[in-house]
Image: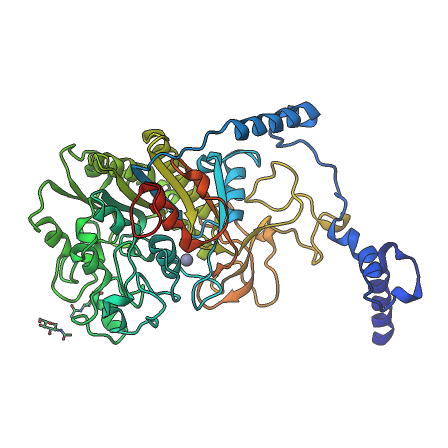
Length: 538
Ligand SMILES: *[C@@H]1O[C@H](CO)[C@@H](O)[C@H](O)[C@H]1NC(C)=O
Ligand SMILES: *[C@@H]1O[C@H](CO)[C@@H](O)[C@H](O)[C@H]1NC(C)=O
Ligand SMILES: [Zn+2]
């Protein structure tokens, strides 16, 4: 009986698989291109089980030819009339959206109102792609990529500001200065420009760290972490000390982000809650304040940042003991005033840096896009991408295109994908509204979400050892709702290896095109600003 059922089932499968081929014998077990094509074409591209209704369509004109033709003609004219800007870049703002993959851009456009929307930096006239692999890793982390885009040298996974000679976590290998790489912020300082860093993570995290630190392990943000790795903090200088006392970090005019705890010993209470993370009795914040340089200001909340006196020359703003909060989290807590936005930090930074008539190089990171993806909470990743987009718009508004280059990129991708065939304007955070096979459901009888991840944390409410969790029984309404994934990981969702976008506006922006190594980015910026050791435009 069971056998007969199985035969019946298999014959059904065969009928489905053969599709429109007809009962031709040679297609029964054949994987010939002809058989494969005719049997799978309709499965790859199933017809809508309901018509495309114009529920969320961007513009009624879209149904006419003229609308698209005019849009296209105008685009061609804009491109043809665009004069190359070959001025020297006095100022550079380099934005990195940590983990801001291409699908993240798509999801953010829809969240901002429609598939046709453009993020601030998508309006920039030139763009390209960067390849993110590292010396010993196919899929990168933020330390080896930070070293690539900040210093122009690719290196080993999780190592920071050192070349591929330094093995991960080797206590002393990075003490050899010949292994150190030089960042574009150092090149700027050497040329008499001002330099600064802004991030929503700790200021000692991998991405900003690549501009001033030289360590064999990105986790060594403080001496406690160095000791946890079995190294002696007296022989291996942690990242926070390199920021406050190092050759580059000590000269930064602006340092804004999170991470007070990495600056202070465990005996010092934090301004908001908890204690420092260090074990060496030090308070690097007071060491920074008392190093003898004039007009220094330390702030730890939004109000004090926004009231920074104009005569401030050095600004250290640390707004959390560890990473800053997701913007949506501060909204939920009704605590928007406890921390500045990325846009506010960017504006404050430019206000200080622009006082140098030789110009500046500023690094700005939207660091929590990555964290949203790691937790498979895409609403947070998209929310942080919107904050990032606003900060870039502000920088472009403040600084003139004729002398200020803005470059926007990402360090690496993530595993989130946008899938199914949802109708135009369908809520990007909802179920795919038009599912496969004509029955309105996936093959397992359940609906599915447009956004999902290739892998994710096993502790997620979206993990079940018996198969998919039915989206109809899940809560996707919160900013931190977990989304579905395929492979359960023992920690968090992983990065992905595909290329990231590069967007440029200002002097020599036309150089930032094509498919390039991520490590080429700082050399192109240095060329535009006539700094560094490589080719220069003047
Ligand atoms: C590091 O050096 C300090 C002062 O020189 C000393 O007090 C401390 O014990 C040393 N720490 C370690 C782990 O050797
Ligand atoms: C060292 O720092 C950790 C926090 O990073 C703290 O829990 C611990 O108590 C500290 N140890 C000492 C001896 O201060
Ligand atoms: Zn990450």
